[in-house]
Length: 367
Image 1 (cartoon, one colour):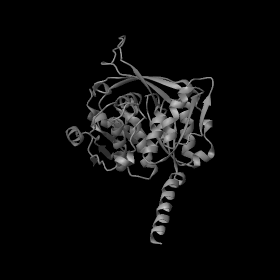
Image 2 (cartoon, one colour; image 1 turned 120 degrees about the vertical axis):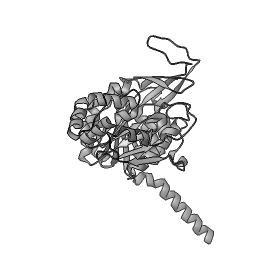
Image 3 (cartoon, one colour; image 1 turned 180 degrees about the vertical axis):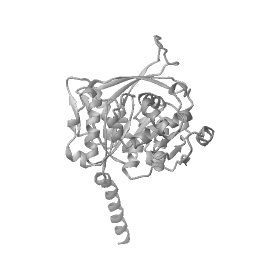
Image 4 (tube, helix red, strand yellow; image 1 turned 90 degrees about the vertical axis):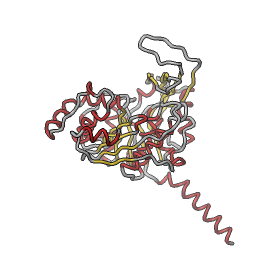
């Protein structure tokens, strides 16, 4: 009958949608699991100062795990590679990832180290935070956890800086042999070798990390400035004015032939390609409860869009939605909205190739 035919067609559609993730190429995240111990005092402590909070909460986190979850909630098929202790914290770490369908078969359990933890102090009024991470089992993560089939199955590799860096770079160099797009979230900021920068496709930073990387790359930035006759500002002169950082970001993108993406909190995010194409996306206006995990949500959604073959503009839009919506919950994972459900939100995107020395035009364009 007509109704039976319609039911069969609907069932086939459901099966197709359910199985589509399993035939898609994979976003593989190589990174850390960390359980966040979150405290909410009325003020953030200054160095040497003790402040009291009325209580605390435990949330699953870690940059790798947060980004894997965000990619999965943005529609990607996701694999997480990392390490956990043989303890109760490990179950907290994996709960949301299991719920989102993230493949955890390459995550190992170790007895000699506990699951990673972090102390997250969040200003109760503004949502601003301070974080200190206890590495734990993340120190035992190895490049050898990757198999050849995993590399063949991966279209986007996402890295951060919370696991042993020599393992990061070993995986990165192997991934490029398979033509995998490589994304590095340089957080927490640390030394990135020249070979790694030359191998990466996307470098994801916040303003603090942009400053740290610019200090590392001061000589390369200076040489680029002299070669193309474009002035650069010393990082000590940025003074919170991001337009002064743009030439340094353009230099890194040009010298290492990659795309640099910088998140700017409530001011959105910007990307610059190696040929000086700039993309700016506004943040979605939301009621901010907690900024913990917002940057990770941005990175994970960006990677998911890359895996779909999206252009830079769409990647920035999807990432902005994900990062903004992450600010509407407490913690980095629990209660995260599915990005595809709120995809009707359309943050404004600007695309421009501008003359970097023209600082007035640059400032007026985006700020």
